[in-house]
Image 1 (cartoon, protein in one colour):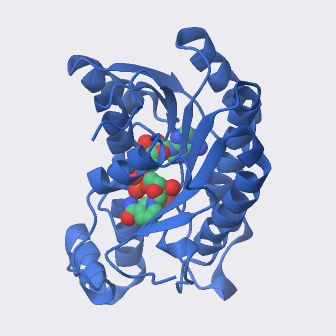
Image 2 (image 1 turned 180 degrees about the horizontal axis):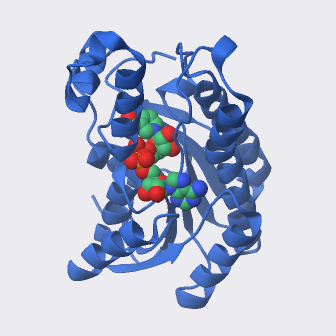
Length: 266
Ligand SMILES: NC(=O)c1ccc[n+]([C@@H]2O[C@H](COP(=O)([O-])OP(=O)(O)OC[C@H]3O[C@@H](n4cnc5c(N)ncnc54)[C@H](O)[C@@H]3O)[C@@H](O)[C@H]2O)c1
């Protein structure tokens, strides 16, 4: 199916690794021009080089998406290099501090909310300013299964990912009159560098996991909670994002779509 995103200008935050890298690759393979914005400039450059080597069009931009000035500079750089942004994928996110709420630290709460929620707010705000006068655009925000159900030890992450969905619904209603769609994607379990960090934190805090590998910890978790009993590949998430960015998906807005092997039913 031709998704109709050939030549579209896209920005993928956290595009250097994990799910973001897979999204950047997929959009580029559909013919989009892709800006990979990442704190880890080396990873972003490596991913952009890989896209270019396959004949795609990609640019790595070092950017901390929690910083308003750097986010504005990212949109400017995108405009100067390719033109106005058509597709924004707010993929940056993750958790800091795995603990019970009663033992958790305020610094970890602040960092997690900033990384997942403030980052989406800043990038949406900057991109919407560019999209509104053109009366078109696609915004896809990365939430999670943790944006649909609470999870012990992940209080700040769940709060932030629920917040991403509420923010997505609000922005979808504000931008609908400009033909800009805004949706959230809610993956279940994907084994990425981010999940490896989470598995390490679980291993460090739970003596029963001391002799398990990080992949074993991940797989056991997936089997215990997922009806389909398998994890998701980053490429599956990228496929859903590419669809939401397409012309076919023009009537879908304000949604939070689960892609989690059947965990969330609402
Ligand atoms: N992996 C999963 O199972 C899973 C499940 C549900 C939701 N998610 C969500 O999907 C998204 C991607 O997850 P992942 O597992 O691929 O993450 P990851 O940690 O593997 O990769 C994240 C990327 O974002 C970059 N990054 C981090 N902070 C940044 C910042 N402030 N500015 C710019 N770049 C920054 C990192 O350098 C890295 O390249 C996140 O929002 C995560 O919460 C992941």
